[in-house]
Image (tube, rainbow, N blue to C red; front, side, top):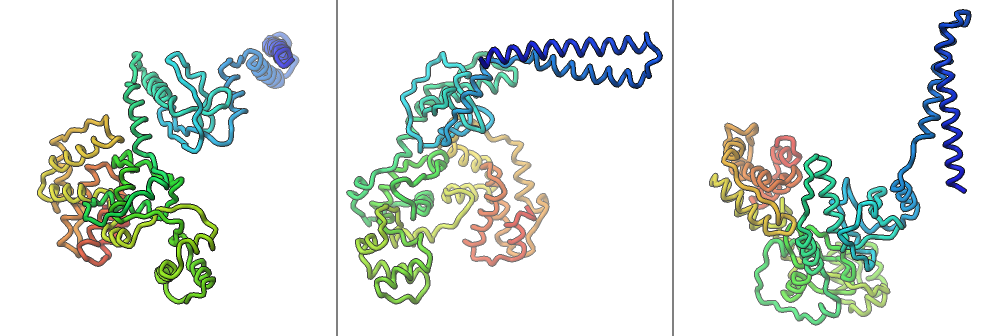
Amino acid sequence: MKKVFSVLSRIICGFFGIYFLLCSIGGIINCFINPSIPIVLCLLLTFIFAIIGILLTKIAFNKKTSTGSASNVAINNIPDSPTYQVGQSAATCSVNTQNEPTDIEPSPSIHSEQYVEHNGVIFHPDGSSITDEEVPYLVQLGYEEALQREGIYDSEMLDLPHINNDLQSKRFQTAIPSYQELCNISANTSNVPMLSTDIFFLKYLDGRILEHPNIAQYWYYEYDINYSIEIKKLISSGLLTISQINLKRFKVDDLKNILRHFELPLSGKKADLQKRILENISLEELSSFLGDSTHYFCATDTGSELIKTVHDSATFNLELENEALSLILDYDYEDAFNLIWNYKKQTPAEKNTHYNYNPAMDELYDSIMIPCGFFYTLKKDRDIEENLRAAIVFCRMYGLGQDKVRKLIMRIYMESGHDFSEDAKNLINGRLL
């Protein structure tokens, strides 16, 4: 019935559209045949009739494609919780792991019409969610569309087996061990070498829920960390533990309420209140009082002290930063550049990048390192000025933004024991970089 009504309405619009167009043509002819009619009025009516005729004929002959209809049906059936978010194309898919995958096997014959994008979300035309296994195909579609837009598409295909292998590797490396598995790990206080990346990961985990920690994936992509291995390493080193109580999430008033219930003193700062609770109340009593059966990652006292030894910086790899800064200070720009990019090429996020040092970069980095070439010179803290210049060069080599430059400058100031002079504040606020 809907289809019949649609066809009928198009016929009517088409009929009247042609009628009004003919009337407008007749009006023009009438202007010349009957001079008694005011020419301004005649032209005005002719213009109005022409506009109405064009609009009606446009409605009559503007056919919707079947793809558009399917898209509208799918959009109306889109569920509230998306599985994949996209940017401008299907190549920028990101996973929402809270949805359960379904058994869908994409085949090479699948066409893009079988996917609908609405408000940055991709779905099947029937409104059902897509799965991890379909991501490589969607990446391929986005790649082809990008080449087509540039007019250089020659049926080139992505290496889909490589994408599938990366997906499997990611799933393996980002898996979180179960509570039972971690409980069987005994702490070994022997000196295990800890890099700055390990310590920053410990700081990141501290206080997070074990069951669904939602660990940021940059730890995998940018630092190639295997979550399971790293967590077990931190626990076995006596730096991390699993607890049913996470006092760090409580405010001072909440801590005092706990102490008041167990008739303990309420004086002291937040750290004093936390320590008093842990020393005088068993975990079983606390868990029973709070009614919380959730498990948390908690840094041990040793782990908390270790966290204090590292300062936020441009990256979580302070060893790489320090070695590269040392090379830059010796004007070994190429060695510093290769050190950075050889490291980045080993991480999953940069597997396919091929950047080579260009000798023309020497002039750029010299313009920063050599005082006469750089537009600003510190009035104070002159003994660390060269280090600050090297920090700017490092961030340029690494491809880091202004916010990262500030963090690295702040670390240099803190580790050198310098006070934050007006020059330092201006540098960190980005007004002099």
